[in-house]
Length: 162
Image 1 (cartoon, helix red, strand yellow):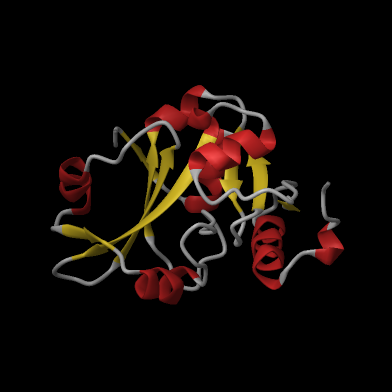
Image 2 (cartoon, helix red, strand yellow; image 1 turned 30 degrees about the vertical axis):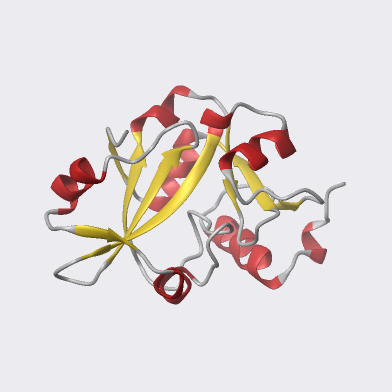
């Protein structure tokens, strides 16, 4: 069921390399089932949907800068609250902008390994879990991590985002 680290697809390999570069021992796995949505990911790895790290990208309306949000799979991002944290209006990023800034397609965006640095925010609800699962560069690649690992990998601001 699991793919060995040496056999990872190029996008999943980039995520694995970024994890290793950050000094963590998380292991990317590519699964036969889709992990594109939070529910599909939870079903594929056998955890609660709240333990899934939804990786979302927004764009600052004035600055054009990318904003990364790691949200609990059980939560919906309050965009008005996010706007306050970012300090400007925000909009959902287009698929092209997501790929340009992260290097990943929507459905496989990882919290690590982005092509460009993104201002990052972490849903505080993720910190209530011992174990999280995040996308790893493709719609069927994931890796297990702790909330501490997530904050380390993203250098994100922990905020109330739901």
